[in-house]
Image (tube, rainbow, N blue to C red; front, side):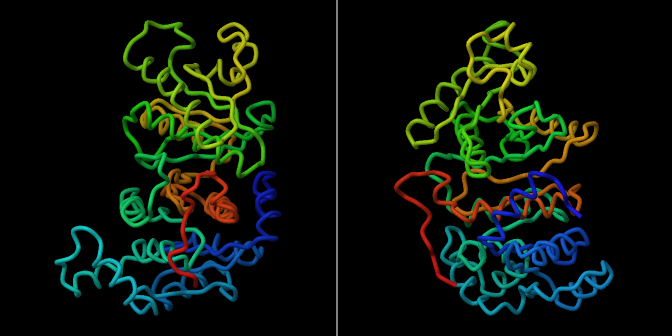
Length: 356
């Protein structure tokens, strides 16, 4: 049974505002177990995609019941024609033959993405049995972005046993999954996205550190450190522009960001140093290696990757994710769906394409 403090805080909120989550990988053992628990905890309705006989067989093997779970076969979904018509209107698809479109819509991840696009579900969790690109491509193509994101990025939530780290042991880090070599404006958008995510999950102001191998010019100034310094300034401006209240600082080494004693030596006067609860990695290599190292060597529970920059909540979860992470990520996505428009308070809020 999941007893993490962070998960329990999410579940308490979701019980009051249940949200419907689609899991396209309906025959994956971890997904079936996590989805059944999500439904049984009354966090919201669940949709598992796949051939019903295979999904039910997997559920029987995992010794879970699907009483509160909807099992849907994309090949025979009632909204299949609606999705086909929409798919044909997308740029580059106009000349595709109907049979080819029908074949593509048999892909559960694409079908789930269209369910999210048409507001038939509140959130999507996928990736346990698929490569990242298979999850990201349909989402990037089908789900509109928030205007301040030129590209989507991602966040990983870390629940640390040491409560002196971050915000009572809670850290949010990004990007460890999407953008290989982010530009300064992309790093800035990730920083603000992490701050907004922290506010949405906890109701508390974020302290965001943009990380580097240098702290406040301690190393030679070069293109890498310049990029982080520029991104910090852009993040501060962007946060103020869209109304996200957060403390943002960089460039900071990770020890200066998290350790108060180191911060006193390296970054005197910083509102973030030594107290950071959101960490922005300078590139995908640094972020991915750091998160994977924490998962391998640390006694830290991780939940990711929550996608930042989409108008609707979704997660591209690691193929190495266990049942607890799948459940936790689903709860995070569900909570984001409760008041997702408030996550980025800007005039062009997500529009309902269709009421289901």
